[in-house]
Amino acid sequence: MSKHFGNTSKIIVRNGNVDKAMRVLKNKLQQEGIFNELREREYYMTKGEKRRRAKAAAIRRTKKAEEKRLEEHGF
Image 1 (cartoon, rainbow, N blue to C red):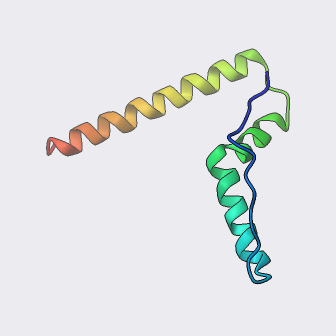
Image 2: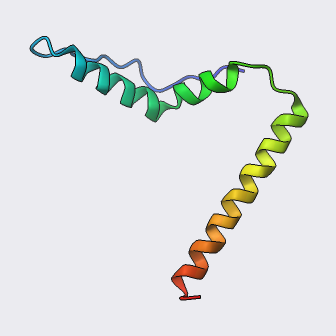
């Protein structure tokens, strides 16, 4: 299972400002989800664990949406 992340982007270093170029690169990698994928692939995760994490994430999303809905209606 391989994912293809965006286009192969080039980061241009202007006026020898490598620090700014590194910040731009990190930002692009973060937006493409590279760091999250690396973190997920660091250790083997069983199917059951994947299922439990997905279920917990779904519960968090629904709770957050419910809180937002209640807040909008003034409860």
